[in-house]
Image (cartoon, rainbow, N blue to C red; front, side, top):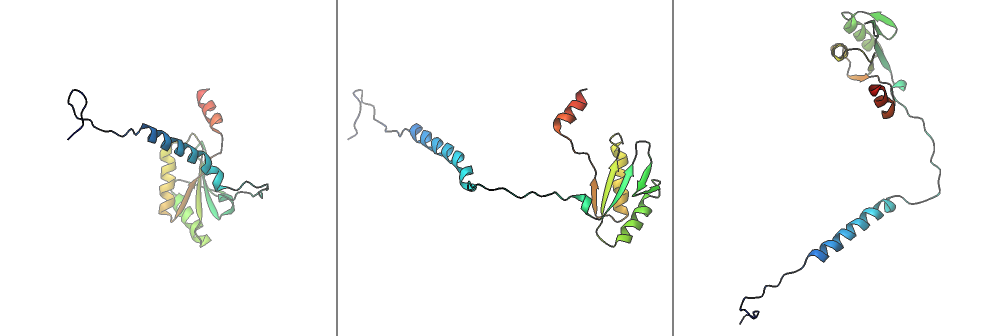
Length: 146
């Protein structure tokens, strides 16, 4: 026989999960706060200094494009038509996996830079890079807003 409330409706027992959710969230917060402390032991030490090594230490060929359209492979002036042959001569002369760095003025249209990259690929370059000047975000945004 089922127990019922005075009106004769059956009683359904429900589990209140809200306290369990609260406890679980508190445990997650504790885990998130303590996890970074467990990964590194707190010790009094001085880390060694190091200099970063980048493309400046690698064997490379530079392709420079000035604002006025003047084009050079390393220190030799070339035309856009002679770019691929000058690059292939330089790449073959190194007999190594040389890095080709494209240095273009910031006002150069992207299509021109893309053409230079395509010519370098046709000349046999396997590794390409575009040279940029490192700056902070504040400098970059300040320059645009002026």
